[in-house]
Length: 221
Image (cartoon, rainbow, N blue to C red):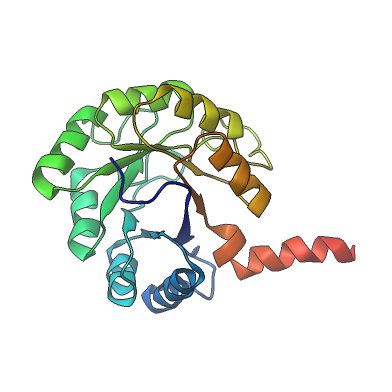
């Protein structure tokens, strides 16, 4: 089950707390530019940004709602968080699909069931490991994404994307696998698609001017 054509590029339009671009209007403009460039969908955080982007573009929106402790389960942790972004215009909901304890104690399968039944939208599980991906699919996730690989173990975050996880999930699961997390070049996007990803989400390398500037500044050292 998917809303995106095979071999799609999805652009994540999010801005951190310190970014001058933070806010619904800048993110809507960013989404319009991504759509003009050919993006097949947008990933956005929070009901205000989702609503502004929905008014600006006619593309599927992966809605997330980051709440709580960033060191734990904070990507759309509850059904209430999911409902807010769906009401704002999200086409599907992405949520933390790791095996970590959930803040409200509701099992992942129960949360996905509520989203399906009450909100009527597909669910994408952001996972960190192969085992979490398999468990998320068994819990009812419609899509599984490698978004959290490298971010939950407590160690240094790897430089590049986890292509091995994408390939392993794609070879096993009977649902679309989405590659996400540290995709910075067209070559990496192509590698993920060749590994079996149905779509690839790119954020920082497209929508974070400060990070892009720092990347180019390395050449001046």
